[in-house]
Image (cartoon, rainbow, N blue to C red; front, side, top):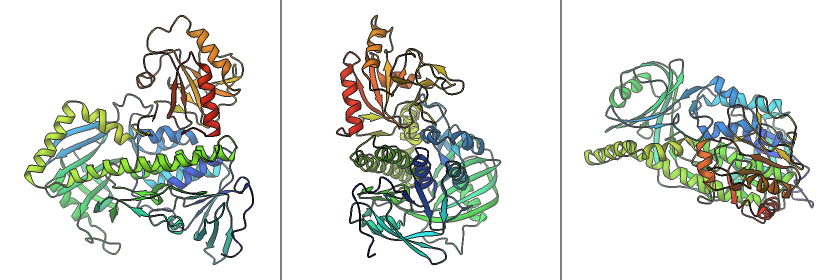
Length: 547
């Protein structure tokens, strides 16, 4: 790749970000950057649309984050809502993880939707934001030795192109060329399971507002309603039992449904079927200089619990707000190190939890089956199942750096709030926050459903009076904090009813909470020391902190 390694000071600040791969995760990265006026180029090797998509569920946390690019409502109009996930053993219901009982999400349900429909919505959003998708363009070489990457692209007509993008995001799947060219290792725990899957029209006695994990001595089967009588069916099979020339037939699915599933179910028609082998893998690094890995290029985990695509989506959100802030000069480049550390840690946690869920479905000795069933029943009856597994499945339990940066139950605005300065109109149907009118700050709003909405692009300051009656001097303390904040700081005054989960997270005493653009708590500070908040915001902007 001679001639491709000439770089210049400041490389990457005035050239497009190259996104390689146009699955849901790559499209999300591109949409996030485009809506902040970051030039983006999206190329895809030609995977195209597929009716045989594997990912078919979006969990509550991702429905929250998808509001950032304004597509949640369209996805809700297309998909099928689930109240939770039920677990069975030999036809007997053991436990249920209820999304509908999550106390701290504006979207207390899971959404089942075929991946190609998710991609269709995201492609439309990409186009609306002024982006284009170049299909049939394959990355064939990558030199990352200098300050910014140099790549070779090969087009379908045989034309080759050499360029130096400012930054590169590898969203090109489990067999990522980007990861291979960067020389990043891709290893994982010893999970090696093959699955047969189908989307099928069925008639069943099982409720269609739940997904169903059914265990039997012969193995496990999952039935996930997708609306209109169509269900995703997934079950473990021996390695090499099926391939592209020999897809799993309807008779096999019916036989396994009869053997493993709860209720009475008849498989009427397969819309498609296929099989795949899962070997859990996690990249040893998610960042190399100005190159990043997201989604399956960074991690492949067990499909148990439907966590794979959702974990990749959170990669996209975590990376995009940081990268766009760097490119706008709001953050220093060191914040991008936190993308690698935060998302790799979460990927390992998700891999561990899905490994346990996978193994739970494959136990087959009487003693182990009895032990598993007893554990599930006890956890359900004591509420542990709902407290632990439901948030884990719904991905509302994601936290960074241990518990230092938990997710807060907030909505992230689908547009910039800079215009919502004191006295300006907020979002449609939104109520003004108490205390509007203070100079120098952007006063945020509650959405029409009463959920506090934070700024999409910058750190937001929450003014929290505590769960008890506010102190007599709260108004004076609050106004002093506001006066000390840098001009344009997004502020949300919480002197009104807030969701219970948010009140619990902020604690009983008055506080100033600084929240990251992705809705994770950066820090909880003493309102009597407004200078601490100002210093933290300064460190967050210049990234001498670990934000």
